[in-house]
Every structure is written in C-alpha cells, then in structure tokens.
Image 1: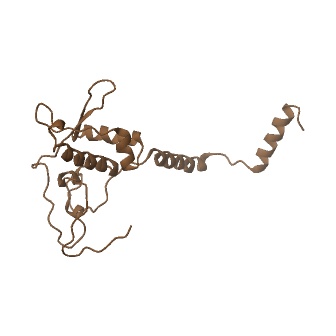
Image 2: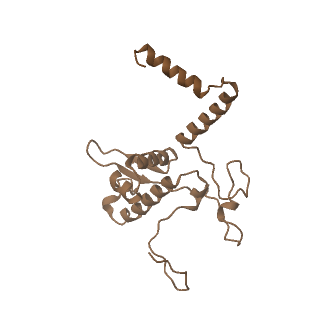
Image 3: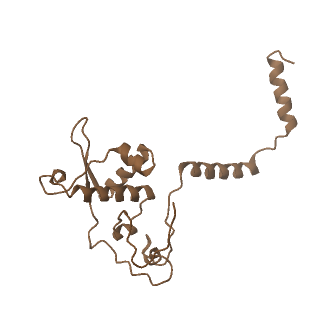
Length: 190
C-alpha cells in the first residue's frame, strides 16, 4: 500500500469514529476497535427501519466470528472486549433466544461527560492535556496497563530466585553427579 501526503482538497477515505469523551476511558486497543466497529455498524443500521426496535433505538447484529475476523483477533478476545464494553455501559447485548443472534445496542457517552480536547497548539499530542486517573495534567500518552499474566509470573519468579540465591546452600556439580550415581546403584545400575 502506498501512502501519500495530505494535500489541499484531499478527501478522507472510509474511517471509524471514536467519540472524544472515550479518550479519557481506560480501554485497550481491542476494546476501542470493537466499539468503533459496532458504532460504525449502528450508523448503517440506522438507515433501515428494520434495525430500529419498538422504543425507537437502533440495534445491530454482528456475529462474533465476523467481528473477530475483521479485527484479526480471536473470538475469545472479542468476547472479553464486549464484556468490558458492557461493564462500562457503552454496549448492551440482548438475547433473542436460543440459536438467534443477540441484539447489540451501542451507547454514546453523554456530552456532559466528554471533556473538551483543545485544538492542537503545536506541542505534544492531545493526550498531554488530558487528566490522568489522579486528575493531574501533562502525563503524556502513556496509559497505566496491567501486566500480562506471563510477565507477572516471570517477575515473581525472578524475585523469588533472587531472594533464594542468598539463602540457599550452594550445590556443586560434583554433589549432583554423586547423587545421580547413588540413585542408579539403588536400582541395580552401574
């Protein structure tokens, strides 16, 4: 794929939308992408009265396998992202019964919750002006992330090994060799 410079008069190709208010919500990249795809699909659904329920709310149906394929993620990863979006009340799924796809309602953050992000002043990125979890400004683009389970395990194991090196008795190669010989003799091997 070739990329070109932005020139005056250029039009924007198809894109996904992310409401500015969600920039202050701690979402993973997969959760953001799932939300953006669902939001995009809901705007397509709004064009047809078939996808509007009795209360006038737009819904959509997006099979998990198709959503996972579009994102190049596993179905379990997409399920986790949907569960997290439901916890944050950004998405609501309603079961239609056994064997029928769920109805998915996409919700918007309210305008009062969305913080105004100032126009680019030419310094840093927009996230530099957003409050972090403690309410301070100017923390940069880095988000607090949980460590993956395997990293936690490796760090914990490393700490344990460092602590045990100082207290464990030294064991030489010779002692391991002799212990091996003793084990073989007990089984009748020489």
